Amino acid sequence: MKTRIRVAFAFSIALAACSSSTQSNNTGVPSLQDASSEVADSGSSDSAAASDAPSDATNDASSDVGDSGAVDGEANTALAILPAPTTTLPPLHVVGNTFQDPSGNTIILRGVAIPDIASVALWSGGVNPRIDEVLQTMPAHVVRLPVYPRTVPNGGYPYYSPEPYPIGPAAPKQSYTIADVSAQDYVTSVLQPAVDYATSKNLYVIVDYHQIDNTLASDGGPSGSGQDAIAFWTQIAPVFSNYPNVIYEAFNEPIDTSATTSAGGWNAAYTRFAQSLVTVIRAGAPDNLIVVGSPSWSQYPNASSGLDGGNIAMTGHTYPGNYPGKGNAFKTRVTAAAASIPVFLTEWGFEIGDASASATLDTPDLSWGTDLQQTVEDGGESWVAWVADPSWGPPMFTADGGVTEFGIFTQSWLTEDVDADWVQ
Image (cartoon, rainbow, N blue to C red; front, top):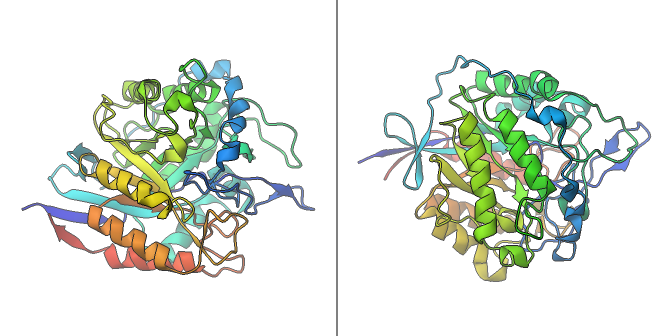
């Protein structure tokens, strides 16, 4: 028999999966309020307070910005490769449909995400205090750290980080200052400190390339945003290749719902793109786990994609607007994929009532959460809840320092499972 250890290691500092339509306040800093579009088959809740969940009506039009595919000449510059950190966390590898440690234990990662790490650092007191705030009440063991490029089209609700990774089209003029830093400066001053602090807290870390856009052009080749993702991982993959606790999430939410991708499913063109991401990551990081997104806002995890590179998992993003609706199609897809490949739900969340600006996130009571919990417990998927913040949605915290019903639910689930051992 094999011990199946549920590790709440995944404190996902998700540099926001949320879409964000920002509004300025009298401080010159955008107020982060829910401003997401309606749910389609998408399950994303990105937002500097907005939900990542876009609508079918805006799916394809929103990708035009990203298609410019501006990539700095600096994107070809090699970054410093960091030495292995001091940590007792073991490296994980894929065996069948599980993550395992070197001793053969099956590891299930559970944790939370914080939004755009640059915005948290500049506007919300810093990443380290946010991690501490989470760990005071949530026994997480994995954190998702989203890294935003300059422009995130996000289904027609664009978001512009105050200090983006320097890749992609420049943001239009905003009411707040957008820092222009080099790739090395971003790693040194923004990303590495967050990864190192999370590592010091004994957390696994997901470095998430947080783009929400079409990855494919009309000819089936990579779009501008697709090219940017390849350039990003060419630089970043080697940087943390010596960190046994770092996981790479290749592309947060591909949209690609046009006929090019068979109306949201995988086709040969998307498989080629996904393989190109895996290949470039593997060139710089031979061993780190890779989590691969899928068309329609990471709604189509695919166990039969044939991706080559090893240590590969699929992701799925889910919110009340896309599950359990549509005949439980998302649940069916996740269950089918998880039978033969690890599935890591790197975003899920909800708001009770109609508190958000988008029906995508809203549910009348906790039954949506308890149904998801039962499904995930049955399948043994790893997960990261979105989002540990009072402003981005769906929020786990309140503006006065309290915890929302979603936050309480996440705390409870993590607490139930933190010391649980399963026999597989």
